[in-house]
Length: 620
Figure 1 (tube, rainbow, N blue to C red):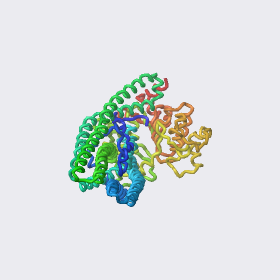
Figure 2 (tube, rainbow, N blue to C red):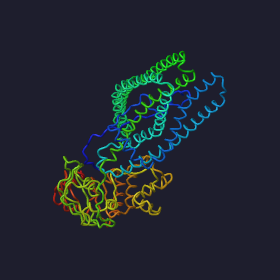
Figure 3 (tube, helix red, strand yellow):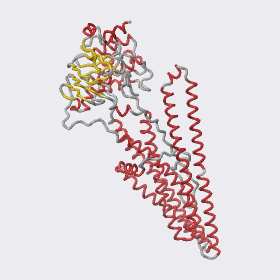
């Protein structure tokens, strides 16, 4: 709109969430490939505020999609079973060879286990990908519906880029965690439990020895993550600033070039980028110690088990087959713990994204219709502002006790300096905001007593900044009346004076407006929105600075279109160019939320007051 009374409020930077990647580890002998769907080493981890509560809420939200996870859960058990069984079979093969018995049958069973393991892993990944995408589809649709239901007050307080980040990046993080990590996590848990049971069954002393390096890895991970968490938090903050700077640079590139600020913009970018590089290097270098040290501890533990098992074999307490199986189990047992720690980091980032998503879904929506709400199907257009006060926040009142009577069918103009409250009054009329005090009546009924959807359809609106969508010219004109025929669309375009330039486009009315019509001039885009409002044929017309961005010739064309659009209906025009509103039935002069004067052009000029001075200033 032409002015925004919303007080500037600090909006958080777009939170750039960490990506995840699959990082397979080397195959364990006789076991599955561990490491799928782990967080990329060095990826920033965002710690959630309430992990348990958020996970519970995610679980409740996906109740309708849980049935798809049942086969994934079953396959995880089968995959873990094959991983647990294969080392035992390998040991049996060794024992059989040592005794000189035939091994053909055991080898065939082992080969069958490996084949089943491959089929299970393939099927599990396929089903998990499908189930994960269905869950994320539900989450994304729920979030988008929540955004649609929010009042304009919410969008005034948040950057659009930050909201887009929640709808895309945060939900994508949840998607990657569900699709890549959930199935692996189930396999790891089943594998650890099954492997531990087999190890205890084979040898309790060797099991106790093998648990020592596992405990050491846990302690190491705790120490390193404690030191890296603040570094990753700082990395996220710097990355958010960098993303915001890039967004501003791209959206305001023409202004940057106009003022020759390219060098300064590059220097600011390089400074933020260097800070990000330095912070990321420290965090990733420190976190990079975890995997090599874990491997060293695991290898030392493997050596301890090998020595102890060798001594047991020398004293006849274990045969070579048992020792072989146990050593394979030791390798298989220690690896998933590191992978689970990485998955936990990925899960923290996903849950933090879910919290940001739920913050939007928990915002108060637009007020619901009253139980006895009445329809506004064909209003006459008699509007009354009855002692209306309003502020975008409690501390700053923008409209001060305004009373105004607008007869049905009248052409009314609001004039005044920028920030005087003109657009705010229009916002209140369309119930983008509700009044803080007083009331606004339409045909004798408080606006809050109407059904909101009906009330909004009663207004045909043309704003100062034209809003077009990446669709065809015809679809943009028919936005308020999707079932309009091509003849009706063309008639509206001719009435708005847009038919001429539309005919010069490559595909005419079927031309797709890329970049919201960036290839069109400001005046051409405005003419399309005029055509849209004419086609919608709403009972009440609102034109907010509709001619402020066009040349005088186009202004005359728009003015003629405005006269056709406002004929026979209540219309409210906000204008700085006073020449466009001289023929209005009522001109209302607003200043700092107060009505200073009202009357026709002739009456206000005869008073020699504020309006007369404004006209004189524009005539100079």
